[in-house]
Amino acid sequence: MVFERYGEPAEVRDVADPEPAEHGVVVRVEATGLCRSDWHGWQGHDPDIALPHVPGHERAGVVEAVGDRVTRRRPGDRVTVPFICACGTCPSCAAGDHQVCERQTQPGFSHWGSFAQYVALDHADVNLVALPGELSFATAASLGCRFATAYRAVVRQGRIAAGMGSPLLERS
Image 1: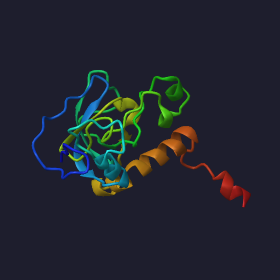
Image 2: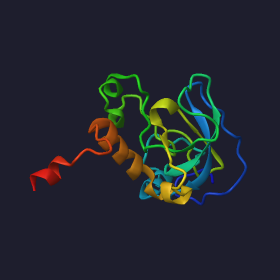
Image 3: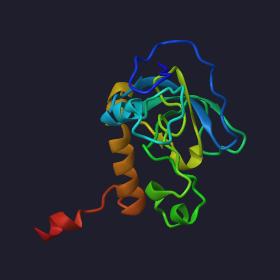
Image 4: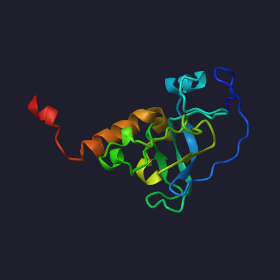
């Protein structure tokens, strides 16, 4: 789905399939969510959006192709990504603060998103979140940026792991 002008009707049409960057992947979109942020982008409220544009930032799918420098993902992997994709190398990322990456990208905003059959995602080793086989793509996409953002906060920042008790629950 592509829109050529802010606030005007979008249309379904063929576009070129993306290629993975050397540090990125191309994901075949199996499900995508629709968020109020997509409306803001369509209205022209986000200065990162260049026209024409393919929106969509909440997605789940299967890795189709990987760049030469990707080491942790393979074709066939079931994945999603957070709303903010990090570079993995800037000072904020080195400190574990990927959500405020100095070179962040936002698929569906800073580049084409998931209202398409395929979407390119950069810095795959940093940004992709594996999906368990029992989780449907539709459920994963409905969790969208909320799930991946919360996952990174709890697991990466909070360093919470299976079997750990909750300090908040233990104090009650």
